[in-house]
Image 1 (tube, rainbow, N blue to C red):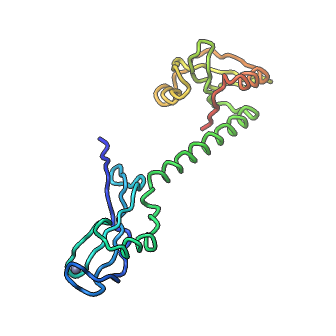
Image 2: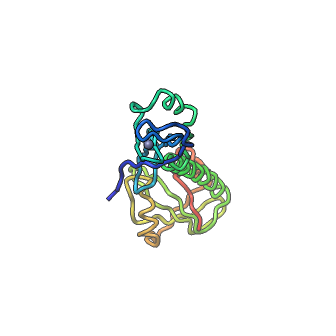
Image 3: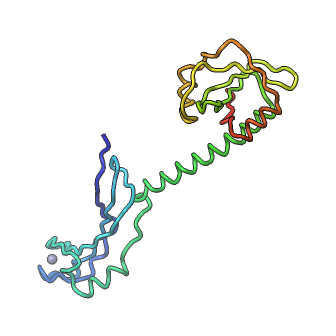
Length: 200
Ligand SMILES: [Zn+2]
């Protein structure tokens, strides 16, 4: 269950510089600024407004903007604080996450190119097959300019599900070996039949 909703926090208390019309105290009223934010599991995602109240430190009367004096409401703009970044944690976290994903993709592409150029027994190729399904090819031999692959017994309908084969069928490769030349592999790479190459 995802718990989400809105919250508010006091982010700034102004100096009490105004007189109170309610209790008559001198310089007892200051402005208080509350940030309103949307949260998921109590982690602030983003703030959507800042609300200002006047507050008398003596009689504790609180007034919204429409109850303030003209002088007080003019002061709002002068005193209004910047909303602390932590009230945008969700957005920042999301941006960081996207950045991580981009870096991971760039990194994997770079590694895949490197592994194709310098293959090793044990490399695992994520492969698109002619029937549109995806499976894993395991490098089991290297002979001259060709790589000998054993093909996994399982296939999945999308490249993102290859992780299921990696996890549940990591040892389920057929016995027969299919040889593919380096030239053909480069062609398969260009035509995007090779999704990725992983090495442990
Ligand atoms: Zn008062």
